[in-house]
Length: 427
Image (cartoon, rainbow, N blue to C red; front, top):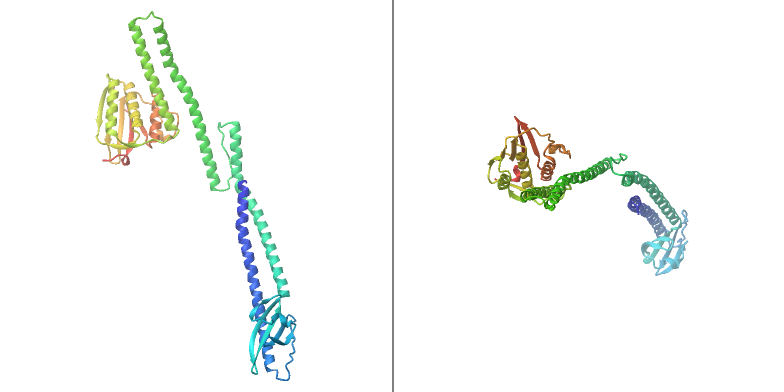
């Protein structure tokens, strides 16, 4: 069953119950009023019969009855009828109190007349009342069905209007799936805030999917480009080694160069794995780490890899944060490695200080200004000449940690900074 059919069925079930309940309530209310009217008329008639019979005298017990032909009576002494009018004496022989028998509403009392107990039964013929109540019931049923039909039609119209934006969204998404995603967006009729939000969120999702597809294409192209050079160098060195005419020294140099290219490949694969993990929103396993110790150990590794560089260290101890230690280490190592690689005076400075509301990690070096787009601007392509994929990995990791990378260039000095909020460490 379609959503439209389910909503229409819900309309019928809800309003049908209400309408039927209301109709039955009206019918039984009118029925009760009719029986009250009859009981009041019957009481008045009964009292008239008793009083007329009681005071008519011993010789004149014949009653002269005029008026509504729906009334009648019967009088009994010890269950033997002594008088009746428009009644079958046997029908009300054992009648007591007030009740209904057959098509009659009756009232029975025992009166003491001249020392003798006599039972008086008066009745009212319900034929006309039953016809009236049947008419009322027919009107109630017809009105209920008419109201249900009207509600069903109105509900169907409103349901169609409410469902139409969702049908349009489905049709447009189906068309997009057939024709392609490039610059494809949906446009819905504005019938409420919810529809506007649905359109906005679907278009955001389409934009995100399109961006991911473009990123995948760029990644594939970039990976092919990045792998081409080291693989070509390795192939050349291996071919040279296989000729057998190379000296031991040249073969050693070729092996060293090949090893360097292998290390580049390993680093490239790690960076692409990190980038893919952070940019597809894979949950990051965070735990409390000693940022001060991590920065110090990472700096020592960079000093070993760059023995000719002068690295100045200024680190405040015991700064704790909640993060992925492996990823934050990659961030620090990448920033330090780039600073060493592009420093114009072979000097680098790394500082980790504690401010009032945050801890600040900064890496600086002398060099040309970098064309840098900050993480806040939500721009996927980071244009940083000479920094390439590594800086993009850094930005992606920080974004996954709800952190940002700031950059400034003053007096020939490049400075990259990361602020760790005060909530992320313990004093």
